[in-house]
Every structure is written in C-alpha cells, then in structure tokens.
Image 1 (cartoon, rainbow, N blue to C red):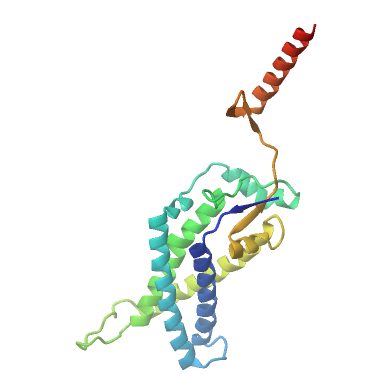
Image 2 (cartoon, rainbow, N blue to C red; image 1 turned 90 degrees about the horizontal axis):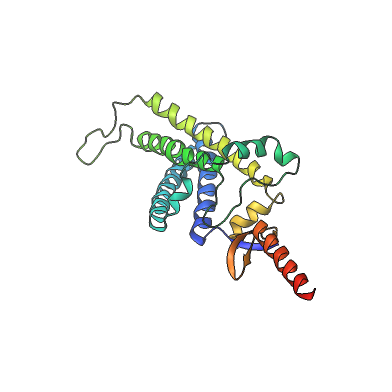
Length: 236
C-alpha cells in the first residue's frame, strides 16, 4: 500500500464545514417550517439566518480558492470512461471489480463525479442560496422605508427554497452512501480527514530501457530477449 496526498487542508476544511452548515440549516429549516419542535421558532429562525450567512461566506472563499489554485479544472466534464464508471457503480463494485479510474492529486474526481458535483455547484447550491436570500429579504424595509423585494410571490420563493433543501438532503444521503464504495467502507472518509488516499502498489506497466524511462513493457521484454540471445551467442 502507498499513500497519495490528494485533499489539501483548505479543501478538507471547506468540505466538512459545508457539510456541517448544510445539516444545521436543514435542522433549523425544518423547525422554521414547523416539522420539528426543538429550539423554538424564534431561535431556529435566528440560527438559520446566521448559518446561512456563514455558508455564503464559505462559498465565496471556496470560489476564490478554486480560481486561485486552479482546482476549478477538477470539475470540467468529460465523457472519457463515463460509461465504464456508470457500469462500475451499477454492477462492477458488487462483483469486486477494480475501479475504472485512478484518483490522484491532479485528478480527484471520476467522470460521473465531475458531472454530479458540477450540477451541485452550478444549479443546486445557487437555487437554494438565491431563493434563501430572496426569502430572507422578502418585503424587508430598508433605511429609506422602501420595500426591497415584493414583486416575487412568497409562495414561489418558499417552493424553490424548500425544493432545493430537500434535493440537498437527497444529495447528502447519496453522497454518504457513495463514500462506502471505496477500498474499505471508511477509506474515503478517512482520506477526507487526513488528506491521504491509500492505494494498492501496482506493478509498473512501463520500465526504463537502455536508461530511458517510459518504454512500454513489451519493448522491455523484447530488449531482454535480444540481450539474452547476444549473451548466448558470445558464449557459443
């Protein structure tokens, strides 16, 4: 086994902070809707508002980090090995087949994850956050006694915000389940805690030939046979 450093410090902080805030927002949001009764409406509404601003701040920092470090490239969609990845999740992993893609620091997401997380970041999060901000300031009064937002029906805002919240919960459940499809049930979670992925040592498919690295294994075997033949000829 060898350890490969995949997840950077801020990446792990952002991941766990975002997960915690989303869960807390779901908890307080259900209380605001009257589905549960733990904190009381006033406290739940206050905590929900504070946590929402914390999440927005975290998202802004995460966007800045992705742009500055170039990590945004991790989410560029590709169809390469997409069919193989879908087959692996549908059938292969239940048969113990090897993972079709290899995770590295430069390629952390498989093709299906790229599409899923891209949709999460460009559709699901914006719908939930924007509807939440409109919900928060709907018919609010500014310092000039003007209504900030009133043209959008509150029922529509509530619908989109609630829909986004439920889809986030569905995403979270599926995401947690998918973490169990790694080398072991907890290996993916451990990697997001420590930053290191454990991988099986593989026999090198390419070995140096004549001091030149990167030659195909077939050429290595051919060169070895040729050398053995030459040595046999010299002995004869």
